[in-house]
Length: 373
Image (cartoon, rainbow, N blue to C red; front, side, top):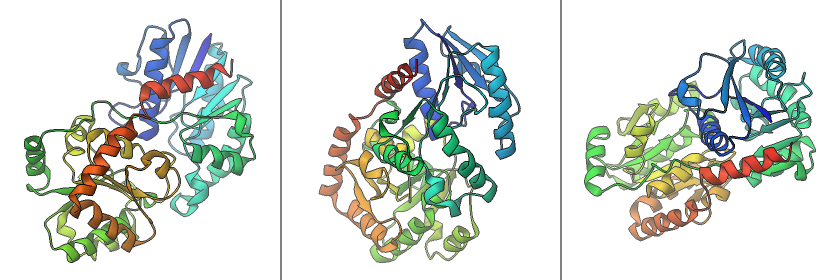
């Protein structure tokens, strides 16, 4: 069987949530199924680290898919040409996009429909592309995989697709994320937060991630508790807005907010378990991998009681209303000042994490792929 895969998001040192899903599942699937030939279709020069096994042949299609016009050209012409060239029996797309100009049976992984729920956070030209093409991709696909029951129901309702066509393939987390010793925590805190404990925010700084309300809540938290806890923000400022800039500059305690920027995996292995807690009050997530990474790392989690996050967190997290600064404030107070609650959440997090792993993800995705054959 010739299996062609869209691997345009496998970019060295720039893997995001969907990139990690692609990396972890495809690595296992290709190595576990040497009986099949896999063609990895990139839109730029690729790194050899992504050629996981001998049954993979890389293909470069063009143009590079960097904005809506190039997305269209890449998937409708570059991908279509690559599918013909490789004589593909099936096409797998881990990032939701498909080619509408091919008859090759296709499986797409739609991670979420955030653009339908929070269109104001998406540039108009990108939003227009999503609104035009994602309903067509969903209908075109022979099968759809997604990362939560919440998103399965969302896809079914939004695009009027029978749920029997949609398979849930949960994300996993990097098994290298582990608890560390108190001495190591102190070293990390000395390195990044002047020796102080810190709340941790991880994610691209985008309005949907709700950093603005977290900053407002943290400012009130500092005023209320008068302690020396910091807020460490890990993520690219790609979507830094005027609204967020205003909120930050009006903070009384903005010097207690430390912007780390994008972190490597090796840095995150120390940063996450050294945190007092993960603070992840996102407005909307298709899954929320940082929640799982925090469980693996042995720290408590504060997250939102919305979309898929309760599905991932189970009874192992404190839930807040992401639209309410006071709700986030109360969550910060609970998770930092109640040591017994923290211990309970950490223990429940260790139990909750066992429901998810990349091995399980890869097996479920392969089961979904087999239903396309």
